[in-house]
Image 1: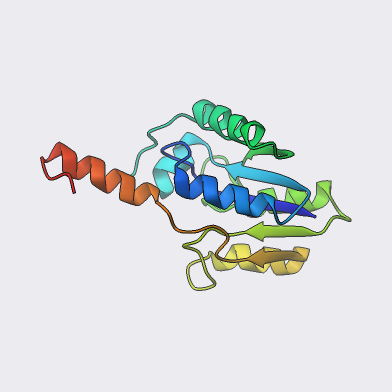
Image 2: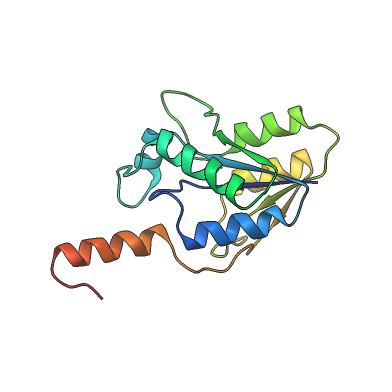
Length: 160
């Protein structure tokens, strides 16, 4: 079985990301971690910018997989339209299914994800491609939104 996780991982990997990846890796024999190009991270994040470059995020994610001794790879999401990316991993899931046509695939969604806040297009492609979705993989230990909120508050002198 191959586990799949996806995320912006900006700012890099925090403890919530780490827990998600570790627990997702336990679901299979191999893990594929998907991240996005900088412009997609900026366009689809609440903060509207990308703080950590794609190159750095790839190095951190690959190093993390090596450090925890997990067999896997880190790839960049394949956009449907290079000029107008949609922020989903639909094309990437299709590519993974084509690359591994006979493997059982599981899309492991993080601790804060469920049927109500997952993109319905991604749900549809998983159903069509027979990719199982596992919600709530990993505890919600932290979030990029929470980290940026703390940084913003500190800049205002209101560290909480």
